[in-house]
Length: 464
Ligand SMILES: *Cc1c(COP(=O)(O)O)cnc(C)c1O
Image (tube, rainbow, N blue to C red; front, top):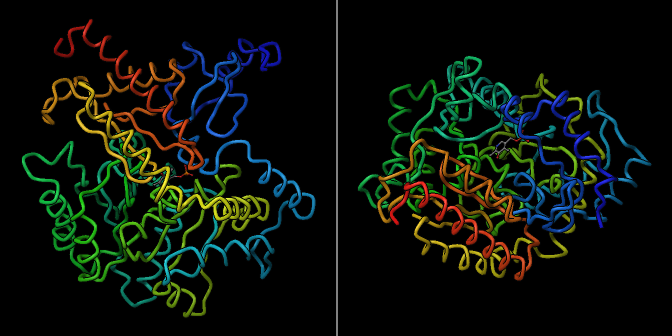
């Protein structure tokens, strides 16, 4: 049992408010409300300092794929730290866990992807991407190919390059982003932006924006297109079936690199090792992070295809790029143990054939709720679109985000961690979630919808 005297909540909250600037936070509002202090986690469960237990429907932040509290990873990290906690990979040195991990990732990745550049996070991975695609084209004798095309409402991290590649308008609004050489096109968000088109028609229209932008900018100026196979932070936007084949065709036809940001979709989330396998993307670069270590130790990387490696390796000159923590042996040990667990417990297959289909059926059944305009899920990543008057997709709550936040807060109080994006609720539980835990998750999600519906009815914001 947790005892509140072990965690002096009030005192910790005061110190938190006084000294700790949290990510993506209104500091002043949080200091007023007080933060929730998470003190323990096991499997899909979290406990806060007041003894509340919650089901972690977001796998931390899309990362604890093998579940919280895995002693095997702690043991592997302990053993590695005792032997060699840190060394760098500069100056012609390397270390065994980083080598083994690179070898393992090459085996798991699509056929044509056999190398990895390690870094510390998904944001750093996308900084590496920006450097590497421009370097690639310079080496190919086409230095004018500099521009990277991305999508509005994409998320590629929070460093200067990551936030610029991302398409989050509020992030761009602070600090003069995006940096030059990055442009954004339509996202394949049918529910929100598809208008009167069918999903399949809209998928083609959204993809052809890429072709139009390439022509506008000039083929000689475009280096790459970057996209998440399924947009995560943007609201779990699952593209229509027609979208990716058309994007693939356009990239191949115009000879621009395709970067599949696998930071969320990598490591089993879709029921395949990578989202690129799920959609058959054959990308040129794949940024990875999050599930790589199941969130236990920060680590990221960029998986590099033979096409790109042949040039950047083949040239025989130094790539002036790298990080102190590239190939960190302790992080690599955590990643190796994570991947070993995933294989031993057949978690990818489990998402494809067992828990995935089970949860998809339970989750999409929430679409019958009067507040839910669409319930969607691939693998174990899904969303609920909250609307005031279904089946209309055009009528939405105003101001945007208020109802989503209300529902999110209600869900927390009910004991289920979901995340709100605009007026949708999103979910991505650990891949080890049991059938009984899925039942409990869906029961709590429905309770959240009911309580939210009643609150909105009382405010006259939905039809009674
Ligand atoms: C989380 C995320 C990132 C950024 O990763 P960090 O480790 O937070 O820097 C990049 N791309 C995608 C798709 C993400 O979801």
